[in-house]
Length: 229
Image 1 (cartoon, rainbow, N blue to C red):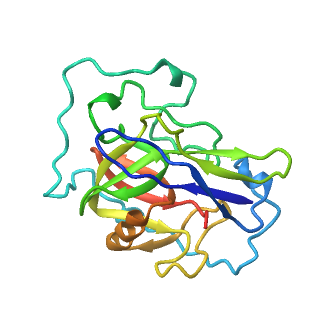
Image 2: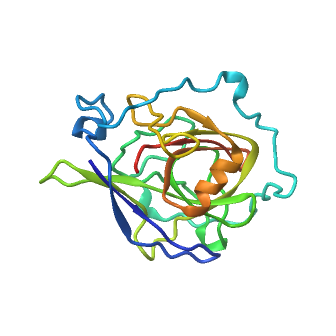
């Protein structure tokens, strides 16, 4: 299955880049729909156990240098174009879902800020500073003629970027190992290797990190990488 990544710069007013193709070996069409696939990746897969519940970040943790934003008391921008999209929630979205998730009521006109608490299928694109990561929702786009596909972010001109501090006790489960030289995934093609916060930041700086991103108390509390080399 072929996966394309896209890159862009960030700022108070966003513009979104064009996807770049990358290949995922032997990713079956069944895996794309969320069911277990019949084909396995060609490389040796190392599956490690996810962290125990005690490793989960506490909601109270907060980087001292990045206070949580105050909620706005004014009316917020609500684009009706996303009314049919599934909202961001604490339910894990389909890994290869084919529609963006929406954040109803989020005001993208007032600058970049965290999405609501919940799990976002998204791309970590860059770091705004030493603690704050920028991310956008993504969807999987199939090619009917080949059965392959790619992840896509919002189109250029669609302002849908978020940014949130990375919690000090963030959980990062990598799909390529902490050294980036392995395949540490399960049968859903998501990461299982627990790596450090510094490793997550170094990956986020480069962009193209597709993941299930958990936001708690306006911070990024957990990042589970989707295998998309």
